[in-house]
Each structure stands twice: as C-alpha cells, then as structure tokens.
Amino acid sequence: MNHPVAEMLILIGAALPASSAAAAKTQPDDKILYKTVGQTKLYLHVFRPEGAKPADNRPCIVFFFGGGWKGGSPSQFYEHARYLASRGMVACAAEYRVQSKHKATPYECVQDAKSAIRWVRSHARQLGVDPNRIAAGGGSAGGHVAAATGTLRGFDEPGEDTGVSARPNALVLFNPVFDNGPNGYGHDRVKGRWREFSPMHNIDEHTPPTIVFLGMKDKLIPIATAEKYEDLMTDAGVRCDLHLYENQPHGFFNYRGGSNPFYYQTVIEADKFLTSLGYLKGTPTLRAPTSQAKP
Figure 1 (cartoon, helix red, strand yellow):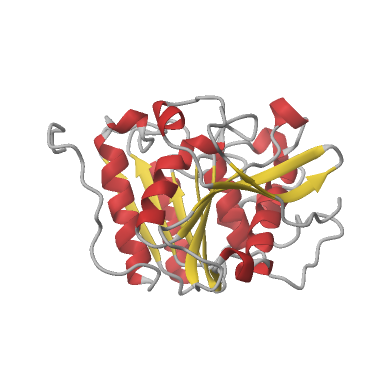
Figure 2 (cartoon, rainbow, N blue to C red; figure 1 turned 135 degrees about the vertical axis):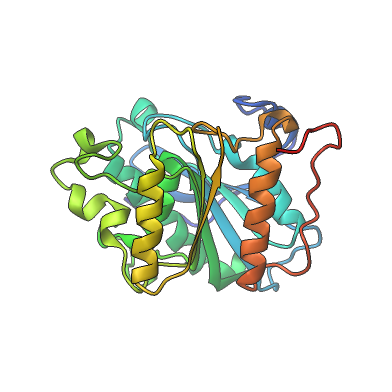
C-alpha cells in the first residue's frame, strides 16, 4: 500500500451510479483520493460549506455506507453530508473496499475506515479541518466500521503512519453492527478474531462520545444489544445517547428521496448532538416537508 499525494477531481456533471433518488440530485463538491491499494483507488466524496477555504478550522465528519461489508455506495450519505456541510462542517462520504468489488474481508473494511480518518487528520490544513473535531458516522456495517475506528486497536493498513491517530473525536451511528460476538451480526465471518473486532467488546474510557439511532423492529440489531452498548459506555464514563424509534426496521433512517420522516428526525438529533459537542452552532435548520405526518 502506498500513500498517495492528494488528488482532487472537480465533479462537473459526473455520472455516478444512482443507488437512490438522492444520488441523482445531489453530488459532492470534490472527490479526493485518500488511499491506493494495488490497483484500487479509494476516494472521499467531499461536501464543503459555502465559502469554505483551507485556512478554516472547521469540524469534519466522515460517513461510511452500509451493505454488510459486501457492497453499498457512498451516495447513501450524500444528503446527510450535504446538510451538515450547510451547517458549517466539512462532510465526507468515504469509499472503502467491499467483498463484491474487491474480494475484501471485514478486516480490510476497517483498515480502510481507519485510513480515511487518519488521512483527514493528517491533511487537516489542506481540507480546512480541525484535527481535534473529526467525527465518524455510518449505517449498519458502515456503522460498524465507524465504531471500529473509535474502539479497536490494530487493523491498521501496513505501512501507514500510526503516529497519526485514526480514532475520531465523536461517533454518529445509525443501526450499527457493533456486536460481532457469538450471538451478534457477522460472527461467522470474523469468529476467529471476534473479540478484537467487535466494538462492543472493546469499549474503554477513550471511546469517543457517541449517538446511536435504532429502529425497534430491527431484525439484525436487537434493542437489548443497543441498550447493553449504552450501559457499557456509561460504565466506562463515556457519553452514549441512544435514540429508539417505534415500529422501525433496519435502514429506517435513509433519505429515500426526501419522503422519509425518519431521515429528518435522526439528522436533526445528530445536529443537536454535534452542537452539544461544539461542532455546530445554533439550532438545526433542517425541516421536513409539511406534508409529512408527525410520528
């Protein structure tokens, strides 16, 4: 693995695969190469606040898409990133290796997530980012790799400068896979190393403050798992805000072309959480369409 010099591609009418209605309408301001492994190049899809410049010292968030470590697209979090950029953050949706495209294992997914956080921190000046206000976010397996950057030791890409921390300063997790134990998700794929790979089993006092969103009808992530995670965080003396949503399944938070009220509800709570940490100022500006019924 070699470390690339930053390579920025301005997207002018670039056609990316439209995995959602959001992908067809919303595009990042830039794509920046953050990692090269063999022939594989991985990019951060970057959304910048209006008027942002390298001399700024803004907070940043890096989102990781879901897909069971097998597939998925950064476009899943385009609308989340676009909104948070409008609030003053530099917001990124990261590519990472997955099984379907790269024959990657879950371990390599975590390696890439750590590389992304480490790259943002080491290039903070170029991005106009505060290296001490970097959040990681994600959904499902993307929630796992985000949580992994904040909890796991090891799983670093060989040759990287581990003197630069890959641990984010905050976590924003949407129905995250954070238990890989014998009764948790994905255990059959990581059972040889589950104790070191499972975020729930590696919480300590250094784990970043975290907000978790979970649907109460999620068939992959039991409510009891999320409540145990919250308890373990509390026992470690670390903040964990758990938000549960009645009758909602896995993936309930996705944008879905703007028709999903739970996209708005969860993003507004994420905004409040980030504001409480000093990443944002003022009150959320996101508003759900008035035609949407309240829960």
